[in-house]
Image (cartoon, rainbow, N blue to C red; front, side):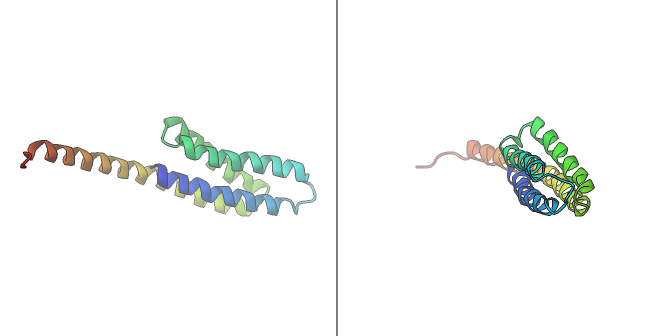
Length: 121
């Protein structure tokens, strides 16, 4: 799960940065505000890569997805991109857990096979 979720979060890091560049063109927004919000979101996306295997990490990842979709009120294309990344996040969590379960099952089978097979020297 870690690899899939981290890949999604790193992709979001770049999308958030590019959205910050687009948001800078809005004359109603201060550059410092845009980069403070974008910087915090970018930091969170990278920091979440380290805690994604914990239950709170997945919940925080969902919060980031909601924030990414909500950023569409500032940069309208983020409604679409946020929805795409929310779908990717769901798939990363869902299929990542299935992959982790399969790895654990294969490891248990291998350990059982090793304990049954006698050592022949």
